[in-house]
Length: 124
Image (cartoon, rainbow, N blue to C red; front, side, top):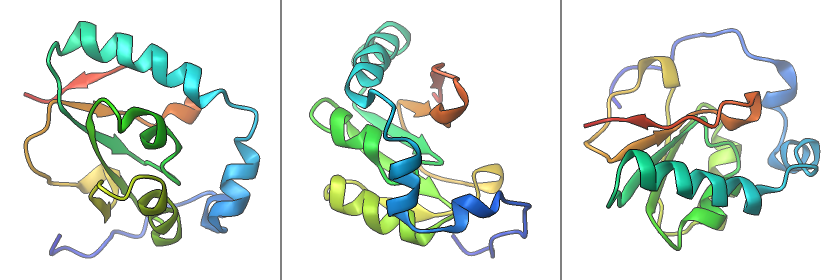
């Protein structure tokens, strides 16, 4: 990405470390969410292989989905990306602003799930 990240307003809590992020979301049943996501992905994009996790945070979804798909991620927080790379070493994680990201062709997008949106966007 050749452009600099734009200065966008961010919630201060998400500027803290990945440990705090994971502690905040420890109540989530990521395995169950990922089962539901697989159903949505398979229905929306049969045969999907590559998924971009937008605002991937620490990569907890990728930890469960990497058995089924190539999962790459973008996030604005480099510390979260380092944690995501540990959870999914085969993924390509890029520091980028999701409002201004230009990437390569993929089969689908995982939108930011913490806000209750379990939709899937087809990118082709």
